[in-house]
Amino acid sequence: MKYFFVIMSGLLLCFYSDYGWSATSTSLVWESSYTKTSPTVDGKMDKIWEQARPLTVVVREAMGGDNPTEVVLRALHTDDTLYVLAQWPDDTKNDMRDPYIWNEAKKDYDRPSKPDDQFSLEFPMTGEFDIRMLTIVHEYTADVWHWKAGRGNPVGWVDDKRHIISRKPIKNGVEYSMGGHGNVYIARLMDEGTSSYSLKPKPSSFEGNVVDSFEQRQPAGSLADVQGRGLYEGKHWTLEMSRKFNTGHDDDALIDPTKENFCAIAVLNDELYWDHSVSPIITLRFTGNSK
Image (cartoon, rainbow, N blue to C red; front, top):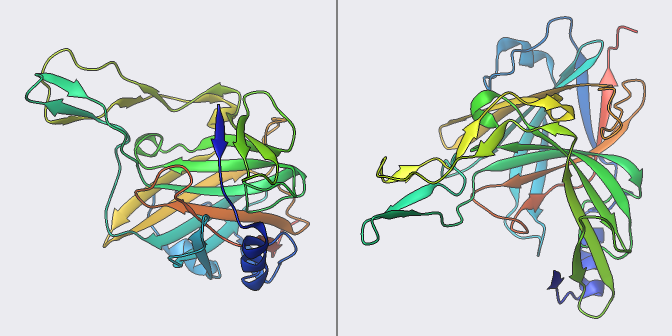
């Protein structure tokens, strides 16, 4: 399947340059503080997070750069694990993805597309890392921690994925035509293993006006690397996530606490696919390491 995008490349590149949205921008430094006590990953900002220095990052819509939103990030680490906390505003809580909706006239359930709130943190693996997926300039692979409020969140797990951006056809890649400027191929791949949720069959009889279309389960393999839990309170989300520096899986990025690590975040508040907001490149720096 091919998708077509008409993009004013020069204007878009100027926009990214003006706002520092490029892989060469390292002005955002996110410090992770060492702790001997691990936070509880439950979406609550416990006292231990007072050790972490907050960093406010502005995310903007990926297509157009509108609607700036502030996200407050914090990070802690032990000898072998990174813990992150993110807080961002959201006027509405959306914690059910594509639920079954009862159609009284049909006496049956429909399943219209409905987004759940989402957040992602990504680290480069290979190539020239960029916040843009629709690019004919850079090719890269990124390790993505993709939190989904209506799927893995109820059981405290985050999808562990990879994004592969290529100018050449790739396996499982979707082709996007860039308005006569060339094509880009994008693959969004789940890591190896079993995810923390699966699609439920449509109910055969009435079970309520709205019924969740997913059921949760214990993940396995590389899809059990990232824990995460978000809580919605006072029109904002608080999300905690954690992962080992080295998972031992080759489909994950190695996080090296002795070096600076580049990363970026994205937020989807009641949005689907390209209607998401992205940050500039962020430098994650570890301080107070015990080793």
